[in-house]
Image (cartoon, rainbow, N blue to C red):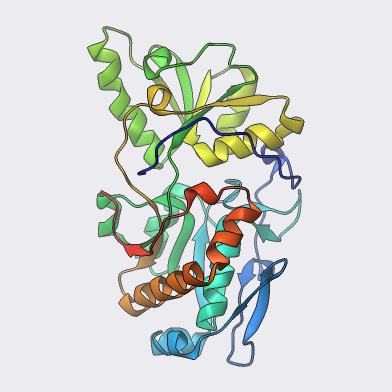
Length: 318
């Protein structure tokens, strides 16, 4: 996560309160992109149309070209990366959905998104149930044994706290001996394990880490006072703080002093190792979207152009 951390201005985008998003089954409304050669272009976000490039489509494996569908596993909700447009809706939105739709259109296929638990995403790809994971997943060396990552974003960790930061969380040792929440199976959970050494070195009690299947559950624990903070990525923390209850419930605390040291690992689109052609095609499609400005416009839609990376890479995480 090679970003120079700084205080974020809380974004204010009137979609839906993250705390009230509900997981529902996702059918055809989770599709993103054309499924045949007949569909050559479509609008991915207002004012931005993406066209299929025949040369990029030709790079796909015959299996994918004939099927016309790439099965994508994602963890919903994790705003602003993946979420439903409203409570009870089956329609997805978010950075990953829009970016996935743009990639799919460029390749002339459909990205079909299906919600799964985060810690089951990689096993599902390894089992052959899905071709791709697109879920704000950190590209880490240990994960590269399961999938190949096409790196596409970069965001550092942050804390979600109650409005006004009543516990005075200012540096990482302030959570030593405190109960904090985190989503299970995430890089943030591993980072909290690493922070325990910092507490020991300071002669302080260990952090009481409570892992939850969904980050929305960690948010509920924060609301109720069960934990003093929720550890997640800074972009999602800012989104949740600014959109939940009109911005009246949560605040964020970010920056190296508060979140602790971390390695420079980008977020990646995880792709099955059984289809290296798909990895190369997704990388090429993503780079073309970077080159023509579509990539930046999608990030600007969610007010987060700062998490952009300059070039699409493969397995750049450490």
